[in-house]
Structures are given as C-alpha cells and as structure tokens.
Length: 293
Image 1 (tube, rainbow, N blue to C red):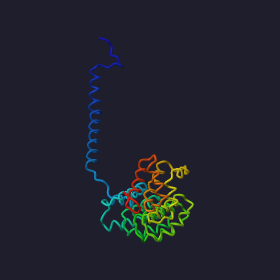
Image 2 (tube, rainbow, N blue to C red):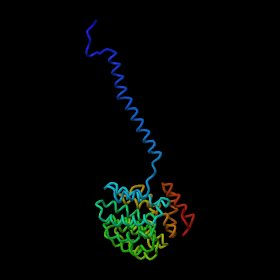
Image 3 (cartoon, rainbow, N blue to C red):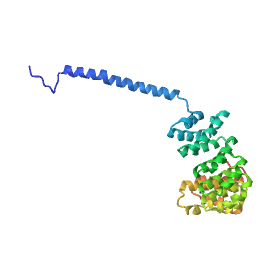
Image 4 (tube, rainbow, N blue to C red):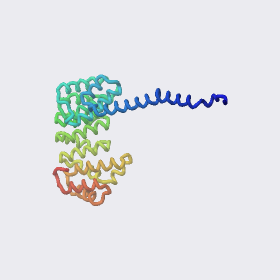
C-alpha cells in the first residue's frame, strides 16, 4: 500500500467535500438569487407610479437630494392635466412649500417649485410667483417663466418691470412670458426691448411682437430667417440655429410683408433642412394671420 499524499486526498474525501460545498454554499446562493429575482419582478408588477402628492412630501420632509429632486419631478408631472390633483388642499400645500423654500439651503428646490407652480396654469399661484421676482436671478427667471405659463393678464405689469432687470436671463424669460400672454399693453416696452444688448432678448422681443401682429421687430425676424446672420454667432450650434429659425418662421405668419415672404420662399426652395423648408411652405400657404399647424 502506497503512503497517503497529503496534497492528493482520496477520491472519497474529494466527493464529500464537493457535496458539502454544494449543499451549504451553492444551493443556498441559487435559492437566494432566485428569491431576489422573484421579489424584484413582483415589485415591478405591483409598484404604482408616484403621484404629485408623493413628490410634494419629498419636498417637505425629504433630505437635501430628495427635496430638489421632488421639486423637479413636480415641475414635470404637473404639466400633465390628468396628473394634477383635484384638491384645494394640494394647492395650499404647494403654496406653503414654496413659501418655506425661501429658507432652503438648496436653491434648486425653490427654482423647480416655481416652475411647478406655473405648470397647472392656475391663478391661485400667481401672487406667490410675482413676489418671487424679488429673489435672486435664477429664481426670478423661473418665476417669470411660470407666470407666462399661467397666462393671466394680471402678470403683465410685473413682467414689464422685469424688462429692466440687470440680469439678461431674467429679462429674456420676462419677454418670452409676455409673448405667451399676448397682452398688447406690453407692446411699448417690448419695442424698447428690441434694443437690448443681449441678442436673445432682442430676438424674443421681436417674436413676442409678431405674435401680437406688431411688425416693429420685422427686421430682427428677417435676420432670424437668414442662416448667414445666425452663423455670425459661434456659440449657437446647428440644432439651436434650426430651432431659432423655426420659431421665427412660425411668428412671421403674423407679419407677412413682401420682404418676409421673399425670405420664406428662399427657405422653402433652398434650405438644407427639410423641417425648415416644410415650415416655410406651410406659412406661405396659410397666409397672413392664419392658424399655423
């Protein structure tokens, strides 16, 4: 009989060791993995989507990350009319959360809450948003945008005052909001905004005026229909350039002068972007003052 080799145990011991490893480690591991998989599948199938009320709770009692993320989700979910809670208590809770957000260490909470207040288009939020025009520039810009989303003529006088704000982004959002509301009381101040030092403010002032069938900004509209002009702004990429042209094309239907028609015909026939050509064609076919689709 040969001596036992300590480095080469008998086959019986090897088999017993494999059984032990299999029974006490591998099988339990497989069972645990399967259980986790079943749990996740059940969770996915039964988990209900979070509601506006859920995100508002995150804003009120959540940690730093939870609060601003909850406010951000509210700014998205409240843009869907079907997901807006039909409960006056929710409105009051939103107003309360916005008021308390003045003291939040993370400004994103108040920024996104401002946008959330504008999404339902309810005037109950108007006063709080107008008061937020006195906040820092980021909050004031978001509040101005939200007032535009509400669309109430009551927002026009305070928005007009923002046209003299020292921060371009605030002036820009005020101009855009006035264009959305479409109140002709803003026309004199929007004409002044055509001379703003910030190109975006000038451009959107011209767009806002065109929507009100005022052609004071027609020269700027013509510039926006010219790719050579937009090429002179190196910070505007191709996608932004196309978007600016599409907005200008849609606004131009209200001020279809011979010069504007000439520019639209040129875009219709020769522009490299199919969407630009089609948009120009539709405006020319619909004619001055017709609904754009």
